[in-house]
Amino acid sequence: MTDIINTLFTSYDLVAALGIVALIMVVSYGFAKMIGQKRMGSAIAIIAGLVLAYIAGRYTGGENGLADVSLFAGIGLLGGGMLRDYAIISTAYGVDINNIKKAGLPGIVSLLIGVLFSFIVGAAMAALLGYTDPADITTIGGGAVTFVVGPVAGSALGASSEVIALSIAAGVVKSVLTMIITPFVAPIIKLDNPTSAMVYGGLIGTTSGVAGGLAATNAELVPYGAMTATFFTGLGSLLVPSIGYIIVNAIF
Amino acid sequence: MEIYGLGIVAFCMFVGSFIGRGIGNLLGISGNVGGVGFAMLILILLTNHFKKKEKPFSERTSKGILLLSSLYIPIVVAMSAKQNVVAAFEGGAVAFLAGGVATIGALLLVPLISKLTVKENNE
Picture 1 (cartoon, each protein chain N blue to C red):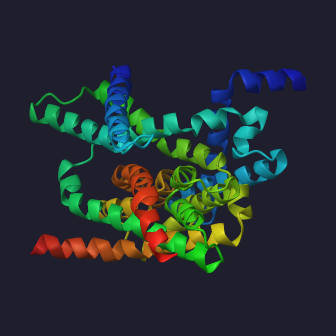
Picture 2 (cartoon, each protein chain N blue to C red):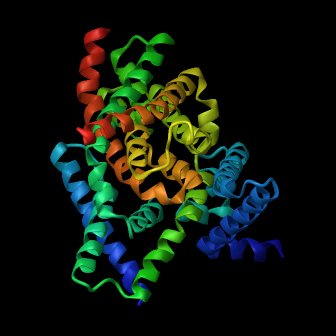
């Protein structure tokens, strides 16, 4: 009996994942309706996903949350980079080209400021907490940009694997925190129009955080934020190990 | 047909990612610099082009694209369920402060930069 169920879940892994996500969303949207906050449905579903990922990570000791439980392996495919990017691109359908043009300059400004700001904050925190090696400080600063930039900078500069792991953790904190708090701070930071969504994507930059945060706030803004965020990691990978390291090296 | 819509997005994804990876190669960093962004731009330009020519995508073709974009939030939920949340909690003070302060600070910069550019547009 359990064998049959196991076989079903592992051989139909993607279908199983679709079913599980549907279940998470039914419960989350039901809960949102119950507490009279219908708009919070996707935010609650995303937080539920994170909670399940935490429980699964504790239980399996793996790095991929629920996807490390063999019954739910399809979550890895459904929530992986391929389908995420495919679906993000499709959200651009129906976007008004004038909105993009209007936010072109703010988008570029926010990208440059976003990468520099996150890097400086991350590096300053590393220095405050006692790191003195410029390569370590640069790597942790890179992690505060995104969890891809940290390892890219760390391996280029020869940082230890412990510091690289820390930089990844810093990037994951950023991504998870963005998903959780964006819907709550959206009214305060006036995240309610295409221009501010593009600025938000350029400033925060973590693709998964921006995707989750905007989906939980207002799905119509997703394409604008995603568009700028997609340039962020590349720009960070370029600037942090080069200019970033030179600056840090000059100070320490 | 619906599959045409899926195919159009696939085409944009491949052309965009090709450009993104090409730029990555030119800059000497492994990876995809803005591939998804280029793909989105291509999709926007394509649809605007056909609209101007008075030949917009058929209803069934656009249904294919809309099916994909309606799967977007479920995919994000699956993505959140596969994050390494344990590592985020166990990264220690450095990870928390570096990632947390960078996030909150960047969020607070959003209205400032949006405002700056509104001014520029008015001038």
